[in-house]
Length: 147
Image 1 (spheres, one colour):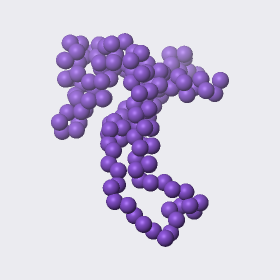
Image 2 (image 1 turned 120 degrees about the vertical axis):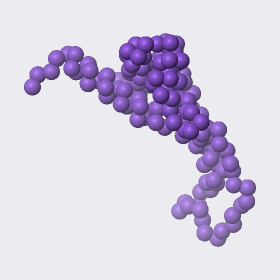
Image 3 (image 1 turned 45 degrees about the vertical axis):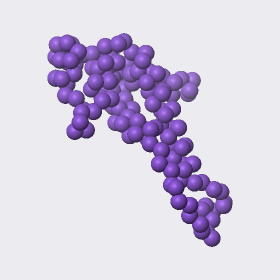
């Protein structure tokens, strides 16, 4: 079965959007929490058994700090790429995906397009563009490494 250029482009757009939602939007909230949480273990543990086979020392405090720094770097990278999008696209992504209501759920599409004074049709077009362009921006460096 032959595909037209528009069908290939459409498949590519859907794949990029799916990737940005699963690789970046879904883990966003947990990364945000990890980047700000620092609860080191206050009590020490003494043991005759080495903590690892090579007797290397890895404290829980050290692991927490490493995880926190990794999450902060991830968020900085994400927000740097988000800031390259047009303002309206940034607002759509921030309101729809990066903020949560008091009950922990995302804002409804209706609330987002009402807040931004967009028609329903224009909102859905812009949301798709925003996710696609964000996906391209986030994956651009990853794809360039193989060249």
